Picture 1 (cartoon, rainbow, N blue to C red):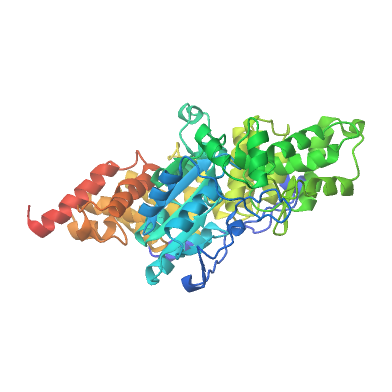
Picture 2 (picture 1 turned 60 degrees about the vertical axis):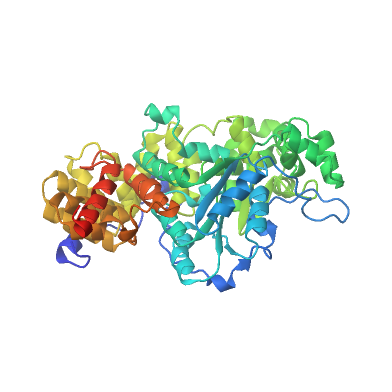
Length: 565
Protein backbone atom coordinates (compact mmCIF):
# COMPACT_ATOMS: atom_id res chain seq x y z
CA UNK A 1 0.00 0.00 0.00
CA UNK A 2 2.17 2.89 -1.18
CA UNK A 3 2.00 5.96 0.96
CA UNK A 4 0.62 8.22 -1.74
CA UNK A 5 -1.73 5.80 -3.50
CA UNK A 6 -5.37 6.60 -4.24
CA UNK A 7 -6.31 3.54 -2.23
CA UNK A 8 -4.54 4.84 0.87
CA UNK A 9 -5.96 8.32 0.46
CA UNK A 10 -9.42 6.85 0.10
CA UNK A 11 -9.04 5.19 3.47
CA UNK A 12 -8.29 8.43 5.27
CA UNK A 13 -11.52 9.35 7.03
CA UNK A 14 -12.11 13.10 7.25
CA UNK A 15 -13.34 14.35 10.61
CA UNK A 16 -14.26 17.77 11.91
CA UNK A 17 -11.29 19.36 13.71
CA UNK A 18 -13.47 21.24 16.19
CA UNK A 19 -14.66 19.56 19.39
CA UNK A 20 -18.38 19.05 19.75
CA UNK A 21 -20.15 21.78 21.70
CA UNK A 22 -21.81 19.16 23.88
CA UNK A 23 -18.62 17.24 24.67
CA UNK A 24 -17.98 16.15 28.24
CA UNK A 25 -15.27 18.78 28.74
CA UNK A 26 -17.25 21.55 27.08
CA UNK A 27 -20.19 20.93 29.39
CA UNK A 28 -17.95 21.56 32.37
CA UNK A 29 -16.37 24.65 30.83
CA UNK A 30 -12.95 23.04 30.59
CA UNK A 31 -12.40 23.76 26.91
CA UNK A 32 -11.36 21.49 24.10
CA UNK A 33 -8.67 18.86 24.39
CA UNK A 34 -5.48 19.57 22.52
CA UNK A 35 -3.15 17.07 20.91
CA UNK A 36 0.29 18.39 21.79
CA UNK A 37 2.08 15.34 20.43
CA UNK A 38 2.73 16.25 16.82
CA UNK A 39 5.70 18.60 16.77
CA UNK A 40 9.29 18.92 15.61
CA UNK A 41 12.21 18.58 17.97
CA UNK A 42 15.66 19.96 17.25
CA UNK A 43 18.66 19.32 19.46
CA UNK A 44 22.21 20.70 19.19
CA UNK A 45 25.12 18.82 17.70
CA UNK A 46 27.14 16.70 20.10
CA UNK A 47 30.06 19.15 20.13
CA UNK A 48 27.72 21.65 21.77
CA UNK A 49 26.78 19.31 24.62
CA UNK A 50 28.42 19.77 28.02
CA UNK A 51 31.19 17.51 29.28
CA UNK A 52 30.13 15.37 32.21
CA UNK A 53 32.91 16.94 34.28
CA UNK A 54 31.61 20.45 33.52
CA UNK A 55 27.85 20.02 33.90
CA UNK A 56 26.05 21.51 36.92
CA UNK A 57 24.71 18.52 38.91
CA UNK A 58 21.60 20.52 39.81
CA UNK A 59 20.63 20.63 36.15
CA UNK A 60 20.62 16.84 36.13
CA UNK A 61 18.00 16.70 38.88
CA UNK A 62 19.98 16.31 42.10
CA UNK A 63 18.12 17.71 45.11
CA UNK A 64 19.65 20.67 46.88
CA UNK A 65 20.61 20.15 50.49
CA UNK A 66 19.78 22.43 53.38
CA UNK A 67 22.22 25.36 53.30
CA UNK A 68 24.44 25.97 56.31
CA UNK A 69 26.43 29.22 56.47
CA UNK A 70 28.49 29.29 53.29
CA UNK A 71 28.52 25.56 52.67
CA UNK A 72 28.38 24.20 49.13
CA UNK A 73 25.04 23.44 47.51
CA UNK A 74 25.82 19.74 47.73
CA UNK A 75 27.18 17.83 50.67
CA UNK A 76 30.22 15.60 50.14
CA UNK A 77 29.16 12.33 48.57
CA UNK A 78 28.63 9.52 51.06
CA UNK A 79 29.31 6.12 49.55
CA UNK A 80 26.34 3.79 49.06
CA UNK A 81 26.32 0.02 49.16
CA UNK A 82 25.44 -0.13 45.45
CA UNK A 83 28.32 2.11 44.31
CA UNK A 84 30.47 -0.72 42.98
CA UNK A 85 27.51 -2.22 41.14
CA UNK A 86 26.61 1.13 39.58
CA UNK A 87 30.18 1.88 38.50
CA UNK A 88 30.59 -1.57 36.95
CA UNK A 89 27.35 -1.09 35.05
CA UNK A 90 28.38 2.35 33.74
CA UNK A 91 31.78 0.95 32.79
CA UNK A 92 30.09 -1.78 30.72
CA UNK A 93 27.64 0.74 29.25
CA UNK A 94 30.02 3.58 28.41
CA UNK A 95 30.28 2.50 24.76
CA UNK A 96 26.68 1.36 24.50
CA UNK A 97 24.45 0.20 27.32
CA UNK A 98 21.62 1.03 29.69
CA UNK A 99 21.97 1.57 33.46
CA UNK A 100 18.83 2.18 35.54
CA UNK A 101 18.66 2.99 39.26
CA UNK A 102 15.24 2.51 40.88
CA UNK A 103 14.27 3.76 44.33
CA UNK A 104 11.99 6.04 46.30
CA UNK A 105 12.06 9.79 45.88
CA UNK A 106 15.01 11.39 47.70
CA UNK A 107 16.63 7.97 48.19
CA UNK A 108 19.73 9.38 46.46
CA UNK A 109 19.27 7.82 43.00
CA UNK A 110 20.35 10.79 40.91
CA UNK A 111 23.37 11.65 43.05
CA UNK A 112 24.56 8.03 43.11
CA UNK A 113 24.25 7.75 39.33
CA UNK A 114 25.92 11.11 38.72
CA UNK A 115 28.93 10.23 40.87
CA UNK A 116 29.40 6.99 38.94
CA UNK A 117 29.12 8.64 35.51
CA UNK A 118 31.47 11.47 36.55
CA UNK A 119 34.08 8.98 37.71
CA UNK A 120 33.90 6.54 34.77
CA UNK A 121 33.48 8.91 31.84
CA UNK A 122 34.19 12.52 32.86
CA UNK A 123 35.09 13.60 29.32
CA UNK A 124 31.96 12.21 27.69
CA UNK A 125 29.35 14.61 26.32
CA UNK A 126 26.05 14.50 28.18
CA UNK A 127 22.53 15.36 27.04
CA UNK A 128 19.35 15.55 29.14
CA UNK A 129 16.29 15.68 26.84
CA UNK A 130 13.06 17.43 27.70
CA UNK A 131 10.89 15.14 25.55
CA UNK A 132 11.01 11.63 24.09
CA UNK A 133 10.87 13.22 20.64
CA UNK A 134 14.38 14.57 21.15
CA UNK A 135 15.67 11.11 22.05
CA UNK A 136 14.78 9.72 18.61
CA UNK A 137 17.44 11.94 17.05
CA UNK A 138 20.24 10.72 19.33
CA UNK A 139 21.19 7.47 17.49
CA UNK A 140 22.01 9.33 14.28
CA UNK A 141 23.89 12.09 16.11
CA UNK A 142 25.87 9.51 18.08
CA UNK A 143 26.66 7.45 14.97
CA UNK A 144 27.95 10.50 13.12
CA UNK A 145 29.98 11.81 16.07
CA UNK A 146 33.35 10.72 17.37
CA UNK A 147 32.84 11.49 21.05
CA UNK A 148 31.62 9.27 23.83
CA UNK A 149 28.13 10.36 24.88
CA UNK A 150 25.77 9.90 27.81
CA UNK A 151 21.99 10.14 27.49
CA UNK A 152 20.76 11.29 30.91
CA UNK A 153 17.17 10.22 31.67
CA UNK A 154 16.40 11.32 35.21
CA UNK A 155 12.85 10.17 36.06
CA UNK A 156 12.67 7.73 33.15
CA UNK A 157 8.89 7.46 33.54
CA UNK A 158 8.59 10.87 31.87
CA UNK A 159 9.80 9.35 28.60
CA UNK A 160 7.62 6.21 28.61
CA UNK A 161 4.14 6.12 27.14
CA UNK A 162 2.49 6.30 23.71
CA UNK A 163 5.14 7.11 21.09
CA UNK A 164 7.74 7.40 23.84
CA UNK A 165 10.90 5.36 24.36
CA UNK A 166 10.44 1.81 23.09
CA UNK A 167 12.72 -1.27 22.97
CA UNK A 168 13.77 -0.68 19.36
CA UNK A 169 14.82 2.90 20.14
CA UNK A 170 16.83 1.59 23.10
CA UNK A 171 18.43 -0.94 20.78
CA UNK A 172 19.42 1.74 18.28
CA UNK A 173 20.86 3.90 21.05
CA UNK A 174 22.96 1.03 22.36
CA UNK A 175 24.13 0.05 18.87
CA UNK A 176 25.14 3.69 18.32
CA UNK A 177 27.41 3.55 21.38
CA UNK A 178 25.20 5.66 23.67
CA UNK A 179 25.54 5.21 27.41
CA UNK A 180 21.98 5.49 28.77
CA UNK A 181 22.02 6.58 32.43
CA UNK A 182 18.56 6.65 33.98
CA UNK A 183 16.70 6.83 37.28
CA UNK A 184 13.12 5.94 38.10
CA UNK A 185 10.92 6.23 41.15
CA UNK A 186 9.99 2.83 42.57
CA UNK A 187 6.28 3.63 42.63
CA UNK A 188 6.29 4.40 38.89
CA UNK A 189 8.52 1.43 38.11
CA UNK A 190 5.98 -0.94 39.65
CA UNK A 191 3.22 0.34 37.34
CA UNK A 192 5.09 -1.08 34.34
CA UNK A 193 6.10 -4.43 35.80
CA UNK A 194 3.96 -7.61 35.98
CA UNK A 195 1.86 -7.62 39.12
CA UNK A 196 -0.91 -9.78 40.49
CA UNK A 197 -3.65 -7.36 39.45
CA UNK A 198 -2.51 -7.38 35.83
CA UNK A 199 -2.02 -11.13 35.85
CA UNK A 200 -5.59 -11.44 37.11
CA UNK A 201 -6.83 -9.23 34.27
CA UNK A 202 -7.95 -6.41 36.54
CA UNK A 203 -6.63 -3.70 34.21
CA UNK A 204 -9.26 -3.61 31.47
CA UNK A 205 -8.01 -0.66 29.42
CA UNK A 206 -6.32 -2.19 26.34
CA UNK A 207 -4.19 0.90 25.68
CA UNK A 208 -3.01 0.82 29.30
CA UNK A 209 -2.03 -2.81 28.85
CA UNK A 210 -0.37 -1.98 25.52
CA UNK A 211 1.76 0.85 26.90
CA UNK A 212 2.51 -1.06 30.08
CA UNK A 213 3.94 -3.91 28.02
CA UNK A 214 6.15 -1.56 26.00
CA UNK A 215 7.38 0.09 29.20
CA UNK A 216 8.05 -3.30 30.76
CA UNK A 217 10.07 -4.34 27.72
CA UNK A 218 12.17 -1.17 27.92
CA UNK A 219 12.84 -1.78 31.61
CA UNK A 220 13.77 -5.41 30.96
CA UNK A 221 16.62 -4.27 28.71
CA UNK A 222 18.16 -2.12 31.44
CA UNK A 223 20.82 -3.15 33.91
CA UNK A 224 18.59 -2.62 36.96
CA UNK A 225 20.01 -1.48 40.31
CA UNK A 226 17.78 -0.91 43.32
CA UNK A 227 18.67 1.76 45.86
CA UNK A 228 17.14 1.55 49.32
CA UNK A 229 15.61 4.64 50.90
CA UNK A 230 16.68 3.70 54.42
CA UNK A 231 20.43 3.57 54.79
CA UNK A 232 22.32 0.47 55.89
CA UNK A 233 24.46 0.21 59.00
CA UNK A 234 27.62 0.44 56.91
CA UNK A 235 26.39 3.52 55.05
CA UNK A 236 25.49 5.24 58.31
CA UNK A 237 28.89 4.40 59.74
CA UNK A 238 30.57 5.96 56.70
CA UNK A 239 28.38 9.06 57.10
CA UNK A 240 29.65 9.54 60.64
CA UNK A 241 33.15 10.10 59.25
CA UNK A 242 32.10 13.41 57.62
CA UNK A 243 32.33 16.75 59.37
CA UNK A 244 29.82 18.64 57.17
CA UNK A 245 27.29 19.97 59.74
CA UNK A 246 24.35 18.94 57.54
CA UNK A 247 25.54 15.34 57.46
CA UNK A 248 26.24 15.38 61.20
CA UNK A 249 22.71 16.62 61.86
CA UNK A 250 21.18 14.05 59.49
CA UNK A 251 23.04 11.17 61.16
CA UNK A 252 21.94 12.32 64.62
CA UNK A 253 18.28 13.07 63.84
CA UNK A 254 17.20 11.15 60.73
CA UNK A 255 15.10 8.69 62.76
CA UNK A 256 13.25 6.21 60.47
CA UNK A 257 14.15 8.17 57.35
CA UNK A 258 17.06 7.90 54.97
CA UNK A 259 19.95 10.37 55.18
CA UNK A 260 19.29 11.66 51.66
CA UNK A 261 15.59 12.31 52.25
CA UNK A 262 16.36 14.03 55.56
CA UNK A 263 18.89 16.28 53.84
CA UNK A 264 16.26 17.18 51.23
CA UNK A 265 13.78 18.08 54.02
CA UNK A 266 11.16 15.57 52.84
CA UNK A 267 9.66 14.25 56.11
CA UNK A 268 9.08 17.62 57.84
CA UNK A 269 7.50 19.06 54.70
CA UNK A 270 5.09 16.14 54.44
CA UNK A 271 4.09 16.50 58.08
CA UNK A 272 3.54 20.24 57.67
CA UNK A 273 1.36 19.68 54.63
CA UNK A 274 -0.81 17.07 56.36
CA UNK A 275 -1.30 19.17 59.49
CA UNK A 276 -2.33 22.22 57.49
CA UNK A 277 -5.78 20.74 56.80
CA UNK A 278 -7.51 22.04 59.90
CA UNK A 279 -9.58 25.00 61.00
CA UNK A 280 -7.49 28.17 61.08
CA UNK A 281 -4.57 26.26 59.61
CA UNK A 282 -3.82 26.46 55.89
CA UNK A 283 -6.64 24.34 54.44
CA UNK A 284 -6.70 26.12 51.10
CA UNK A 285 -2.93 25.86 50.77
CA UNK A 286 -3.17 22.19 51.69
CA UNK A 287 -5.77 21.73 48.93
CA UNK A 288 -3.60 23.44 46.33
CA UNK A 289 -0.71 21.12 47.14
CA UNK A 290 -3.04 18.09 47.25
CA UNK A 291 -4.23 18.89 43.73
CA UNK A 292 -0.63 19.10 42.49
CA UNK A 293 0.25 15.82 44.24
CA UNK A 294 -2.66 13.94 42.69
CA UNK A 295 -2.01 15.34 39.22
CA UNK A 296 1.54 13.99 39.50
CA UNK A 297 0.22 10.63 40.73
CA UNK A 298 -2.10 10.59 37.71
CA UNK A 299 0.91 10.97 35.41
CA UNK A 300 1.01 14.70 34.66
CA UNK A 301 4.71 15.44 34.89
CA UNK A 302 4.83 18.79 33.06
CA UNK A 303 4.58 22.04 35.07
CA UNK A 304 1.03 22.83 36.24
CA UNK A 305 -0.27 26.36 35.82
CA UNK A 306 -1.42 28.08 38.98
CA UNK A 307 -4.78 28.82 37.35
CA UNK A 308 -5.32 25.06 36.88
CA UNK A 309 -4.53 24.39 40.53
CA UNK A 310 -6.90 27.17 41.48
CA UNK A 311 -9.68 25.58 39.44
CA UNK A 312 -9.06 22.14 40.92
CA UNK A 313 -8.29 22.75 44.58
CA UNK A 314 -11.94 23.48 45.44
CA UNK A 315 -12.71 19.76 45.08
CA UNK A 316 -10.36 19.01 47.97
CA UNK A 317 -11.38 21.94 50.10
CA UNK A 318 -15.10 21.21 49.78
CA UNK A 319 -14.68 17.50 50.53
CA UNK A 320 -12.68 18.42 53.67
CA UNK A 321 -15.35 20.76 55.03
CA UNK A 322 -15.13 23.94 53.00
CA UNK A 323 -16.11 27.09 54.90
CA UNK A 324 -16.16 25.21 58.21
CA UNK A 325 -12.35 25.14 58.08
CA UNK A 326 -12.15 28.95 57.82
CA UNK A 327 -9.89 28.77 54.72
CA UNK A 328 -7.36 31.51 54.13
CA UNK A 329 -7.44 33.76 51.06
CA UNK A 330 -6.13 32.33 47.83
CA UNK A 331 -3.11 34.66 47.75
CA UNK A 332 -2.18 33.59 51.29
CA UNK A 333 -2.54 29.94 50.30
CA UNK A 334 -0.20 30.41 47.34
CA UNK A 335 2.38 32.18 49.49
CA UNK A 336 2.25 29.40 52.08
CA UNK A 337 2.56 26.61 49.49
CA UNK A 338 5.43 28.24 47.59
CA UNK A 339 7.49 29.61 50.49
CA UNK A 340 10.97 28.14 50.81
CA UNK A 341 11.45 25.86 53.82
CA UNK A 342 14.80 24.99 55.39
CA UNK A 343 16.44 27.19 52.76
CA UNK A 344 16.17 24.38 50.24
CA UNK A 345 12.69 23.48 49.01
CA UNK A 346 8.97 24.21 49.13
CA UNK A 347 5.70 22.29 48.96
CA UNK A 348 5.07 23.60 45.44
CA UNK A 349 8.27 23.84 43.43
CA UNK A 350 8.71 26.34 40.57
CA UNK A 351 9.19 24.52 37.29
CA UNK A 352 9.40 26.36 33.96
CA UNK A 353 6.13 28.17 33.35
CA UNK A 354 4.31 26.52 36.24
CA UNK A 355 4.56 24.53 39.44
CA UNK A 356 4.86 20.93 40.61
CA UNK A 357 4.55 19.21 43.94
CA UNK A 358 7.84 18.42 45.69
CA UNK A 359 8.36 14.84 44.53
CA UNK A 360 8.87 13.49 48.04
CA UNK A 361 5.26 14.45 48.78
CA UNK A 362 4.07 12.51 45.74
CA UNK A 363 5.85 9.34 46.81
CA UNK A 364 4.77 9.70 50.45
CA UNK A 365 1.12 10.10 49.40
CA UNK A 366 1.40 7.02 47.20
CA UNK A 367 2.91 4.99 50.06
CA UNK A 368 -0.07 5.93 52.21
CA UNK A 369 -2.37 4.96 49.32
CA UNK A 370 -4.31 8.20 49.65
CA UNK A 371 -7.57 8.21 47.71
CA UNK A 372 -8.16 10.43 44.71
CA UNK A 373 -11.16 12.79 44.91
CA UNK A 374 -14.51 11.08 44.38
CA UNK A 375 -16.48 11.57 41.18
CA UNK A 376 -15.47 12.53 37.64
CA UNK A 377 -14.48 16.23 37.87
CA UNK A 378 -10.88 15.58 38.94
CA UNK A 379 -10.25 13.22 36.03
CA UNK A 380 -11.92 15.54 33.55
CA UNK A 381 -9.71 18.39 34.70
CA UNK A 382 -6.61 16.18 34.59
CA UNK A 383 -7.41 15.16 31.00
CA UNK A 384 -8.10 18.74 29.97
CA UNK A 385 -4.74 20.10 31.16
CA UNK A 386 -2.55 17.21 29.94
CA UNK A 387 0.19 18.81 27.86
CA UNK A 388 1.10 15.89 25.62
CA UNK A 389 -0.01 12.45 24.53
CA UNK A 390 1.88 10.61 27.27
CA UNK A 391 0.26 12.69 30.01
CA UNK A 392 -3.19 12.25 28.50
CA UNK A 393 -2.72 8.50 28.36
CA UNK A 394 -1.40 8.34 31.93
CA UNK A 395 -4.32 10.39 33.28
CA UNK A 396 -6.96 8.32 31.50
CA UNK A 397 -5.27 5.02 32.37
CA UNK A 398 -5.14 6.01 36.05
CA UNK A 399 -8.79 7.09 35.88
CA UNK A 400 -9.76 3.75 34.37
CA UNK A 401 -7.86 1.90 37.09
CA UNK A 402 -9.74 3.94 39.70
CA UNK A 403 -13.20 2.96 38.49
CA UNK A 404 -13.89 5.49 35.70
CA UNK A 405 -13.59 3.34 32.56
CA UNK A 406 -16.88 4.63 31.10
CA UNK A 407 -15.63 8.20 31.44
CA UNK A 408 -12.34 7.25 29.78
CA UNK A 409 -14.15 5.69 26.82
CA UNK A 410 -16.20 8.88 26.38
CA UNK A 411 -13.09 11.05 26.48
CA UNK A 412 -11.29 8.98 23.85
CA UNK A 413 -14.38 8.97 21.62
CA UNK A 414 -14.50 12.76 21.84
CA UNK A 415 -10.88 12.95 20.77
CA UNK A 416 -11.74 10.88 17.72
CA UNK A 417 -14.46 13.40 16.89
CA UNK A 418 -11.76 16.05 17.29
CA UNK A 419 -9.69 14.38 14.55
CA UNK A 420 -7.12 12.61 16.75
CA UNK A 421 -5.75 9.47 15.07
CA UNK A 422 -4.09 8.34 18.32
CA UNK A 423 -7.54 8.19 19.87
CA UNK A 424 -8.73 6.11 16.92
CA UNK A 425 -5.89 3.66 17.62
CA UNK A 426 -6.95 3.50 21.27
CA UNK A 427 -10.50 2.64 20.26
CA UNK A 428 -9.22 0.00 17.81
CA UNK A 429 -7.50 -1.66 20.76
CA UNK A 430 -10.83 -1.69 22.59
CA UNK A 431 -12.25 -3.84 19.77
CA UNK A 432 -9.17 -6.02 19.39
CA UNK A 433 -10.95 -9.04 20.85
CA UNK A 434 -13.72 -8.66 18.28
CA UNK A 435 -11.89 -8.47 14.97
CA UNK A 436 -15.02 -9.35 13.02
CA UNK A 437 -16.63 -6.15 14.23
CA UNK A 438 -16.59 -3.57 11.45
CA UNK A 439 -15.65 -0.87 13.99
CA UNK A 440 -12.28 -2.55 14.60
CA UNK A 441 -11.20 -2.19 10.97
CA UNK A 442 -12.66 1.32 10.70
CA UNK A 443 -10.66 2.60 13.69
CA UNK A 444 -7.52 0.96 12.29
CA UNK A 445 -8.11 2.51 8.87
CA UNK A 446 -8.56 5.94 10.40
CA UNK A 447 -5.40 5.66 12.45
CA UNK A 448 -3.41 4.07 9.62
CA UNK A 449 -4.54 6.74 7.18
CA UNK A 450 -3.10 9.37 9.49
CA UNK A 451 0.29 7.61 9.51
CA UNK A 452 0.20 5.41 12.62
CA UNK A 453 2.64 2.58 11.85
CA UNK A 454 1.35 0.43 14.72
CA UNK A 455 -2.15 0.62 13.23
CA UNK A 456 -0.70 -0.43 9.88
CA UNK A 457 0.95 -3.39 11.57
CA UNK A 458 -2.36 -4.48 13.10
CA UNK A 459 -4.17 -3.89 9.80
CA UNK A 460 -1.62 -6.07 8.06
CA UNK A 461 -2.20 -8.77 10.66
CA UNK A 462 -5.92 -8.58 10.02
CA UNK A 463 -5.31 -9.03 6.29
CA UNK A 464 -3.08 -12.03 6.99
CA UNK A 465 -5.83 -13.58 9.10
CA UNK A 466 -8.15 -13.16 6.10
CA UNK A 467 -5.62 -14.86 3.83
CA UNK A 468 -4.84 -11.77 1.73
CA UNK A 469 -1.03 -12.02 1.91
CA UNK A 470 -0.43 -9.68 -1.04
CA UNK A 471 -2.47 -6.90 0.52
CA UNK A 472 -0.80 -7.53 3.88
CA UNK A 473 2.65 -7.13 2.30
CA UNK A 474 1.56 -3.83 0.77
CA UNK A 475 0.13 -2.57 4.08
CA UNK A 476 3.18 -3.63 6.10
CA UNK A 477 5.50 -2.07 3.52
CA UNK A 478 3.68 1.21 3.98
CA UNK A 479 4.14 0.87 7.74
CA UNK A 480 7.83 0.23 7.19
CA UNK A 481 8.10 3.45 5.16
CA UNK A 482 6.77 5.27 8.21
CA UNK A 483 9.43 3.72 10.46
CA UNK A 484 7.51 0.75 11.86
CA UNK A 485 10.11 -1.83 12.92
CA UNK A 486 7.35 -4.29 13.80
CA UNK A 487 6.23 -4.14 10.17
CA UNK A 488 9.77 -5.06 9.09
CA UNK A 489 9.90 -8.06 11.37
CA UNK A 490 6.48 -9.21 10.20
CA UNK A 491 7.55 -8.89 6.57
CA UNK A 492 10.64 -10.95 7.38
CA UNK A 493 8.34 -13.54 8.96
CA UNK A 494 6.13 -13.65 5.85
CA UNK A 495 9.01 -13.98 3.39
CA UNK A 496 10.72 -16.60 5.54
CA UNK A 497 7.50 -18.63 5.49
CA UNK A 498 7.36 -18.17 1.72
CA UNK A 499 10.95 -19.39 1.40
CA UNK A 500 12.28 -16.12 -0.03
CA UNK A 501 15.66 -16.05 1.72
CA UNK A 502 16.85 -12.75 0.27
CA UNK A 503 13.80 -10.78 1.32
CA UNK A 504 13.66 -12.53 4.70
CA UNK A 505 17.23 -11.37 5.27
CA UNK A 506 16.46 -7.82 4.14
CA UNK A 507 13.43 -7.41 6.36
CA UNK A 508 14.55 -9.51 9.31
CA UNK A 509 16.31 -6.74 11.24
CA UNK A 510 16.38 -3.22 9.75
CA UNK A 511 19.75 -1.53 10.21
CA UNK A 512 21.38 -4.75 11.48
CA UNK A 513 24.43 -6.37 9.85
CA UNK A 514 23.14 -9.89 9.42
CA UNK A 515 26.60 -11.28 8.69
CA UNK A 516 27.30 -10.62 12.38
CA UNK A 517 24.61 -13.06 13.48
CA UNK A 518 25.82 -15.85 15.67
CA UNK A 519 28.97 -14.10 16.87
CA UNK A 520 27.44 -13.55 20.27
CA UNK A 521 28.47 -9.97 21.06
CA UNK A 522 26.62 -8.39 23.98
CA UNK A 523 25.09 -5.57 21.90
CA UNK A 524 23.81 -8.01 19.27
CA UNK A 525 22.38 -10.19 22.01
CA UNK A 526 20.50 -7.21 23.43
CA UNK A 527 19.18 -6.16 20.03
CA UNK A 528 18.05 -9.62 18.93
CA UNK A 529 17.24 -11.31 22.21
CA UNK A 530 15.87 -8.64 24.47
CA UNK A 531 14.87 -5.63 22.39
CA UNK A 532 13.44 -6.74 19.10
CA UNK A 533 11.89 -9.88 20.48
CA UNK A 534 10.46 -8.05 23.46
CA UNK A 535 8.88 -5.42 21.19
CA UNK A 536 7.21 -8.20 19.22
CA UNK A 537 5.89 -9.84 22.37
CA UNK A 538 3.10 -7.28 22.70
CA UNK A 539 1.64 -8.83 19.59
CA UNK A 540 2.16 -12.40 20.81
CA UNK A 541 -0.44 -14.84 19.63
CA UNK A 542 -0.64 -13.38 16.14
CA UNK A 543 2.67 -14.73 14.84
CA UNK A 544 3.01 -17.93 12.86
CA UNK A 545 6.36 -18.50 14.52
CA UNK A 546 7.40 -17.74 18.07
CA UNK A 547 9.80 -14.86 18.54
CA UNK A 548 12.74 -17.15 19.19
CA UNK A 549 11.85 -19.36 16.22
CA UNK A 550 11.71 -16.33 13.93
CA UNK A 551 15.24 -15.21 14.80
CA UNK A 552 16.53 -18.78 14.63
CA UNK A 553 14.85 -19.58 11.32
CA UNK A 554 16.01 -16.42 9.58
CA UNK A 555 19.53 -17.02 10.94
CA UNK A 556 19.53 -20.57 9.59
CA UNK A 557 18.16 -19.41 6.22
CA UNK A 558 20.94 -16.84 5.87
CA UNK A 559 23.62 -19.37 6.85
CA UNK A 560 22.16 -21.93 4.46
CA UNK A 561 22.25 -19.38 1.64
CA UNK A 562 25.92 -18.55 2.27
CA UNK A 563 27.34 -21.93 3.20
CA UNK A 564 24.92 -24.47 1.78
CA UNK A 565 24.81 -26.19 5.22
